Image (tube, rainbow, N blue to C red):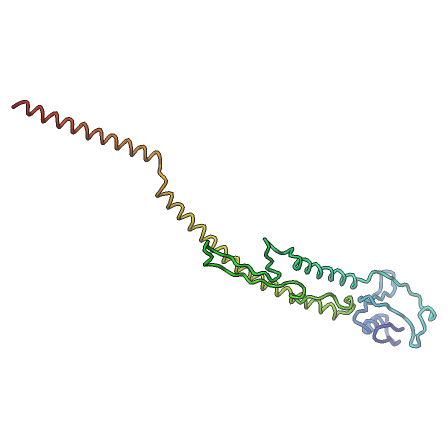
Length: 240
């Protein structure tokens, strides 16, 4: 019995489990098991075809071996196509400026300068990055992921891209904290200056009315006091 991969399984003495182990040893992509009906089930997990024959190439049907095959969907190929679609979506998101905000795309090489006063003498420059698939080091799937090595290659690229994104997210977070601190400082200073100006220019009408009434009372009392003093002096002079 041979399998079109890397070699053949030679008949040997032993139980059925030994035969299964021998088949599995031919290729790591082979999955061999006994199904619920007691039949030997052989699956090539990378989507390759399986051909059973003898060393001279005689097919299994001539040898009296009965087998049924399933032409199902190649799972790895399907996953590879989904992966390639996501890779393309990354470029669409970055290069079409879908990731921009108010005309600036920090993920596509457009730097941003934030000014903290009206004279533009104080500012913070935020350096941009280019995070398309080329910048992230991500490429389309290789060989439809038929081999584990092809999948591992894509996984390594994704791991590298994740590390780059995490590092850049940390840097953007630090810039955001700096901007928020300056914004909080500016708002607090504005509130202090506004409160001070109001204290100097705005008056409490009730307090000012009371002050005015008090001033009028003092004026009237002063006037009456002067009038009484003048009358007293005149009364004294009349005695002479």
